[in-house]
Image (cartoon, one colour):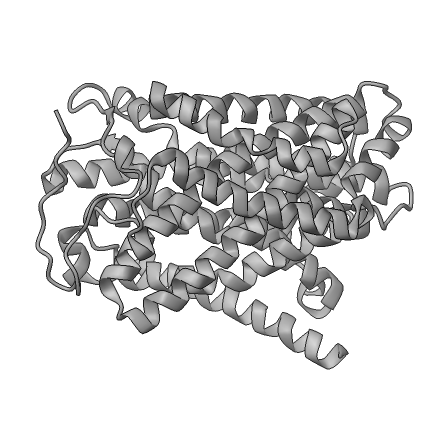
Length: 448
């Protein structure tokens, strides 16, 4: 029996709701209407881990490795701050999706006139282009490091993720979530072993979480800090979470949806705190190996793979690094493909067969990645990966501002409007991101 969307007043929206994005899995996962809190939470666990892959995508690796090798542990404070911002924003995404039955892309389409929503769609697609570029290249590098497959062929092989998603989705969306969680677990084990081998200065690690003014005053550090921010609080994750949270079959009443928002928020918070450990581990590994030995210019993933064995004194370290990179690349391509579908369907309401939508999305990403990989070669991939993450940071305000507007609007959210204190924190977050981006652009202008 098909799941009926929660009924609500359409006051405040320019258009009525259309068909849901990811309609083939909408409301497909049964939740527990009764039982203990932990039993209910278990049925909601999953979407947060798809969002958490933003912490472990190859672009994040490049920025964290560059930041750790160049500045030691100093940028750990950025990783922590980014994590707190992500927790807040993803909670708002879950609230929007559950309260309105719309993902962020649909909400923009239904709330804004076309001359506003169309540019927002283009900016969202541009952000996904940057995300896809990082993930496809990262997966190709992982295949190259482990199996010696040339980057150009590795990029093409990433097309297989389309068929992987279709296979798993036919089995049920829970299978996609299980794949993501399993690969995150493998990544965690790989980094735990490498961190143990690196034996970092834990006192310096703790001090690295304390903020320093140098992050803002040093243009190079600010550039990497924004890269870490863009790799963590990723624009496509905001669209993704507001869509996939609706795979849960929750009740129609305000009380049921309020409980669903609470459970979905706990899910994403747990997942993001777990992902913070991975994100911080990448930076700590670079600081404890490369920065400690004076190799402050290391950022290429292939270069890290070659240098890490003698520095850690273990022959298995490069293999662990390659396995973790390949796992994170697969994870990220899966979630980016789903995000691309949500954005395309939400903003412009294109309806294609699932396989066709995903093949188009992945095909566009592969063509872009293949061109830049062939053009720049392996030696230029780190610069491309870092640049892609900075681009994501520059795109963030165009996703955050509408999200905050919608969730603060009682006319659109009804009784499930975000608490005022949450809205004010989100406004401060948006202003902070905008201010950092303006500072970065000003630094570039003055340098030019």
